[in-house]
Image (cartoon, rainbow, N blue to C red; front, side):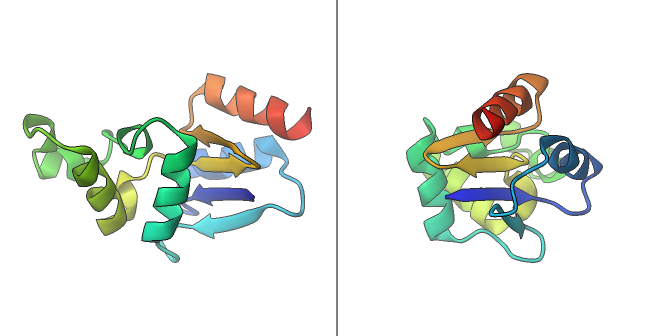
Length: 117
């Protein structure tokens, strides 16, 4: 699979997409207009160590719901991510059997090297 989950209204995501110069066969999924499904998040989870690693603690809703003061389980991370797109750490790049989560320089450089050799 070659897919990127992103938010078209996020300047960081659009900058990263142009920087990555993704091949034409990549699928793009704007998670605001096409929410991720249970099957998709489960596919992502197989490629990473936890649902928590896919979860954004920077989301405004994270603070609004006071989630940092709650003890969240893996199931909670999964359910919150499915409930609202802002909880998915963005972008999520799936390339063959590898996953790259978030927008840190290290993650993006690693994705670039994997995709372009």
